[in-house]
Image (tube, rainbow, N blue to C red; front, side, top):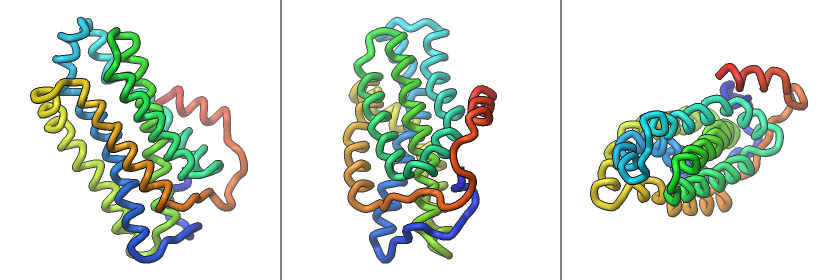
Length: 219
């Protein structure tokens, strides 16, 4: 994943457009971090409504975290090769679709599977968003953009439990996930309109399949 090392921009944006683009990218990141934390306060209600066992409840959280963390490097590399915007958009679609499946789940198997799918979508969104920022921002503005991206992660990690508690108390635990539908649609619209497509220029071609399998399995 080339985003970790700043490089020359491949599709720099000028003026206000780049900051609007950043806002939609950050909103997409906020959505996946929200769901990583919101479930912590929603789980007790989900256990009661769906009759989950203790093991089921643990996997509701773990299924998301495991797929999300283990696939970050893989999807980061894919995004560099085939297009970061493309993978970001696909990730949002997968994440929102999985969120609807979570909200509609009536069994532990469906619920845990949907949470794993959310993790896959999140793993597509996070590295591709960072790579896009690295590609379209230059100089001091790049540092500011990285700060906004990082601040979004920290802020949503703190805000997630509050949002989850409010939605679970005054609506239902389903809305802790259905809230991703309007957010995801807004992100898709903004990214499709404002974010340019970028790919890695130079560097080794192809994908190290053995290394990818080993690092994914290890994580």
